[in-house]
Amino acid sequence: MDKITVSDARRVEAVGRSVRLQGWVRTRRDSKGGFSFIELNDGSCQGNVQVVAPGELPNYEAVVKHLHTGASVSIDGEVKASPAKGQATEVHATHVELLGDADPETYQLQKKGHSMEFLRGIAHLRPRTNTFGAVARLRNQISKSIHDFFQERGFLYVHTPIITASDCEGAGELFRVTTIDPDAPPKAEGKVDYTKDFFGKPAFLTVSGQLQAETFACGLGKVYTFGPTFRAENSNTPRHLAEFWMVEPEMAFFDLTDNMDLAEAFIKRIIADALARCPEDMKFFQERIDKDLLTRLEGVMKTPFRRLPYTEAVDILLASGKAWEYPVAWGKDLQSEHERYLAEQHFKCPVILYDYPRTLKPFYMRCNDDGKTVRAMDVLVPGVGEIIGGSQREERLEILEGRMREQGLHPEGYQWYLDLRRYGTVPHAGFGLGLERTVLFLSGMGNIRDVIPFPRTPGSAEF
Ligand code: ATP
Ligand code: MN
Figure 1 (cartoon, helix red, strand yellow):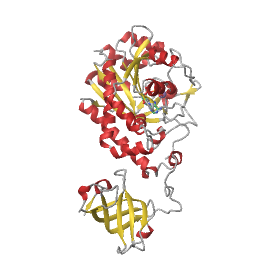
Figure 2 (cartoon, helix red, strand yellow):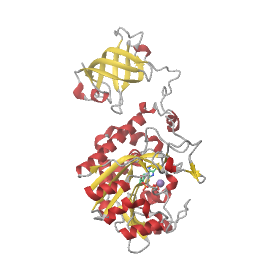
Figure 3 (cartoon, rainbow, N blue to C red):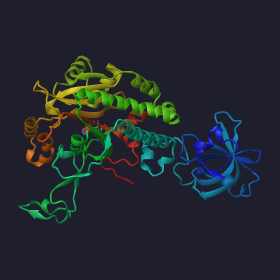
Figure 4 (cartoon, protein in one colour):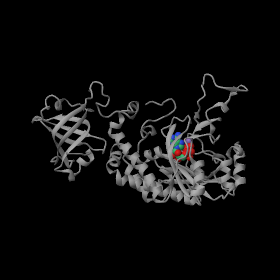
């Protein structure tokens, strides 16, 4: 008797085997012939396996005929070829054990067809639904592809810190990490005295591992970091989370074109892997979530990404004749509506915008000779908008210090970062890909809260 998964039991190769299956009852149907069909799922795949439970089972009347949706069971039986349509196999039970019942009066997944909003409220139970099973398996596959892609190309996986103490970029978006008692903080000159705090200075959750990844790239060549990232931005959108996962490759001796080539190959690889390794889940997304999904993804894999400067994108948007919610002008940040217009309607393919106004982008992006733009790149995809943000980094010490002052930062606080330019500086580049935006893109799901196990958003950190 082998313990196998539902996924294995559904394969025709399993026919003839005596097996034990353990999982949750999706539905039970009693036949007039005095036996029951149990649809069993264990999360190993999208589909269920059909268990035929004969009336001869000693606990048939007492237990089997009362199995509820959501109950956990352990079933022994033989895998047989199934005469029914749409399934290769079925399992004829010789033993059915109820492990844990699920009271149909109170079990919230008793019925199908709940809204995503409702399921968000029971995030501890939604892994048992078809949609969240598919999302979880796809998210797992994407994570694997990320490691495979970089490992195969000789990148080193580095672990950058979660807690950072440099008074870094985007101060408004930082979560503070402190052990100071908020009701009785130590004070100096009327202000909270952070020299008395745990680290002896203010500390925060990281918004990006890039600066630390640069230190490894400038010594080890090609590296990537992949971990949780935190942003206290108060944006209640379907594309923003306060805690999300980001993969950030950083490469010495790469310029912006190399960076774009890598980003494009990376996205195409993630799609190819998902289609090849999660076909059942991808089919589910196509049928149940987004009718255009597979055509769109196959198109993305075949088509070269359209690359164009920010300035040309602004011209296209201005000439579009569209009434934008946020007005377009050179020097203004592009909003999701603009990004999606370019990728979905104008070019109908992923777009890599580059050479953004220097006022829009952080100090570490390399300045162009025009004095107005920096070597930034954003990858925009249909259905989501921005999925990657990156740049070639400024490797020239004086220019970098100048950019810091220009943005009101103090070079004294970044001596370790400036040392990379002081000693053996090299051209280098990198980018950040948001994992959840990638799952949105590959699944066609509409809200980022539904592609992470436990979403953290303004006003909400349940579970
Ligand atoms: P946006 O303009 O959409 O807020 P950003 O310009 O702040 O994004 P970057 O700082 O370039 O984004 O971060 C790199 C990538 O991380 C983004 O392209 C996106 O995929 C992802 N990302 C950024 N902020 C969030 C967030 N709050 N929630 C989820 N993913 C995010
Ligand atoms: Mn942002």
